[in-house]
Length: 154
Image 1 (cartoon, rainbow, N blue to C red):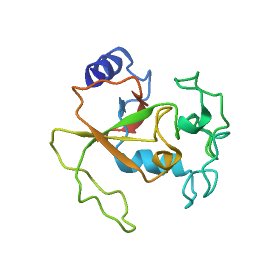
Image 2 (image 1 turned 90 degrees about the vertical axis):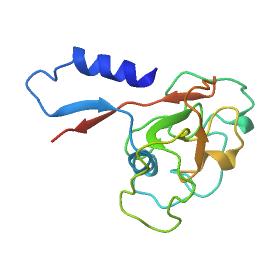
Image 3 (image 1 turned 135 degrees about the vertical axis):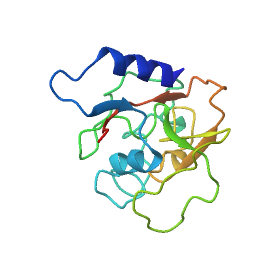
């Protein structure tokens, strides 16, 4: 699966002269931080859902589109909202903090992983920056993908 792909990628790319870095799935907190891009609004573009900003059920497209069809967020990340939900490294914990918390960590094990961002098959409210979805990793779906992050290992 995804972890095998990332492990192979890390084994093949030695970061030529830049040791101490590795590819990984982002944690749930890292994903939301990147999605928000410094905003505190419902979506990175504001508080109202707008199908002109992300591929969702409201867009009427009914499938994924090539990355970059919508404007990036303020930090240059494309498609953080919509198109496909994205797996995170964290296992699902229903008691995730509801108030402001700095870099919360998920549980070390579980049966369902967190995905974020909403997909082409989700209503607009599922695209919110803070929306969490959980699925068993053994259940691949055409509305779930992943985004690789680069993480400092030391």
